Length: 469
Image (cartoon, rainbow, N blue to C red; front, top):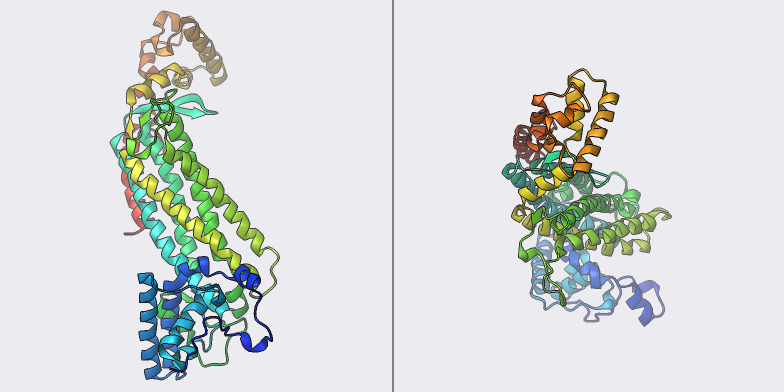
């Protein structure tokens, strides 16, 4: 073989008269983190080599050697026996160097018609496409868990809140479906992001394209891309897909954080609405009675780092001229960490949500203490012909009476209720119960148990349309 054994040789070294400063070499190297792209880099190289052979740039024998050599390099990395070195800067140069060491000059021909600029942009899109597919699987599991909870508890009444004050009764199933709606929108956005990610930069070369007779449509087909990128300048410099993904990640983590906040509240003794299995909690090193909801708390906290990554990428790109700039080396770590954070958070929630046990007696008791059916009394009076503003005042006085008596409105006698309005009759108690209040919201989008059951069934169909199996 004619390949050099010099692991520090630079493929661009012919222009330079002195070696790279040792500190600068370490400072500019990215192999410590972009090595994560090795499978996608090799995937792109296989497709590129096949295309170069099809257009006559490589011979069949050279293609066979390249493919066999790439298999060997991938096997070494998989097995953990591959040597990484800052002198080779990035994952692309490592793989090209290792390939050349294995097969000689044929390895040097692989880079014909491409640049590291379009190579890394392609690798990132291949990586993110796979990451999106993995996240979609976890997101689907979480949505299924929410639908499972909704279907399990369509009748369990709990207080609905505004301003974190008891407002009106809702069912637990209805609340789970509210979380489901958040995440189904996230699923829709994720699939939309995947569509724009699935565009191939390869063939743009450094920035202007290549004089070689390449077939970009062939390469795109081999790699499963929807189409090649239309403009070479944009293809190598665009990171919109990474920014869009991180925006999706920030929005999804915001939703998980809202869910986390409610779970933290609901598991506290002050609420005591639900119980999380011990396997999702930890204890205190000093207070033996404690059971801390660490998974929701940690997910709530991790939201901040994903928000930060989005801001970091937006700032990274805001002043870059066309085309590729070294700044873009800084796109990978925030993108990788966003993927990792979402993968862990979604997995934790997908495992935890179906295992939640509710305490319906406690939820109903809290709803009663908060006069959750006060609005139902106002609506009852309106149906009896009382103007709403007058009904509002009557109910306010009724609530004051219940506070003084230290009881719920439904526990006041008919005589007491009629002191505030002669329109009130015995049938009022049908609407003053929590169950009656919830059941009365029997319309599309309402909290009535029958509506929860119907919405849960629709939810499965909508989930299958958004995230097909």
